[in-house]
Length: 156
Image 1 (tube, rainbow, N blue to C red):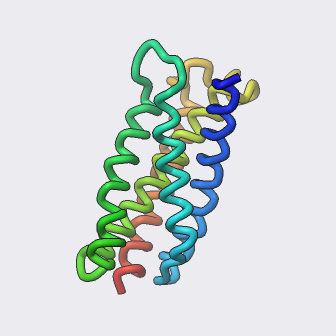
Image 2: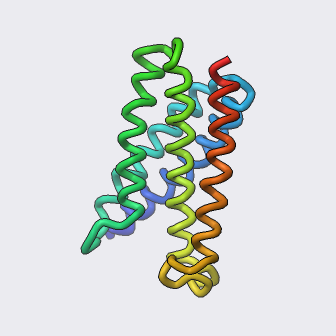
């Protein structure tokens, strides 16, 4: 019962985080900050990352590494926004942090999709097969391109 509730919270926060993060990214691509969406994104992403560590597991997984990195990067984004008010280099640090967190969350969502969706699991049962690796690579490539554009536009 507790694990089911935790799973529900984890999934909802992850989906809300990714959705609101996409809104923040679109705003940054236009040179704007949607503050409410940014707050929802950071909160949702942090809750999803932290709750991921409460699931039974015998060893650390790559998704745990992504969650830890996302938490560390959020620790740069929040002060850049709330303490340094996005002045100077802090706007670039914030924009890059948001995109890194969103990219990590998306990569984790892809990994979970390949784990829990039968049609994808059949394509890459161990997540070392080319369909999984190509998908992860394409997602990373998209976020690298978006990060260059968003950091440039958001800074200006």
